[in-house]
Image 1 (cartoon, one colour):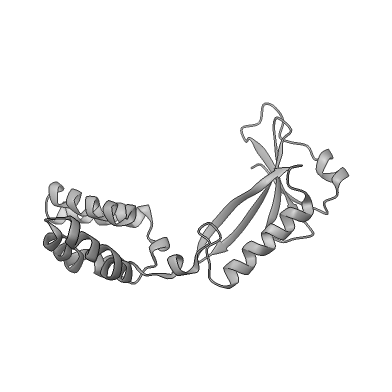
Image 2 (cartoon, one colour):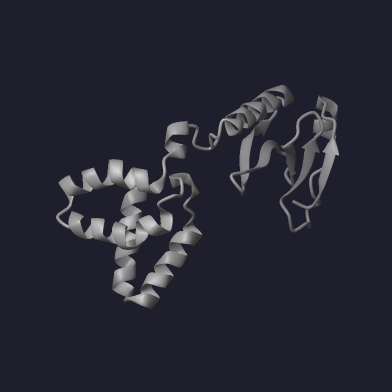
Length: 182
């Protein structure tokens, strides 16, 4: 993305907007749509165009490609963006779509879903429960599942490896992988 310009979009304007020059380092130029905040039109070097939705949600940048032009008209893109905004106003992540899943905390999921499953499936369920109690629930318990980031997991892994051994750190990493797979 080389520049960000706001335009009142019409079919004529959409089709006349230039993309980046062939020798440019970026693959597209974004133009903000004046009719709807947080909606952009990306114009690529090859001339193709796509609608994008950008907004902050729960403190993180949210970026969703709505669809390509002309498959998605301006009116359709605006309506989709408004749908996303309504979902976000109800505290629903538009990438996930389900309020119940996006609001469940790590601790609730572990206690209500994962541990009952693990006790039936794994011989090491007692060890897993100990690992949750010792570190994982303290670290991630209050976060929503959708809010736990790779960076947080990497930092926990590094900390456990420094405080104990690499094998123990890998066990924690494996357990978290099982939780998020489930």
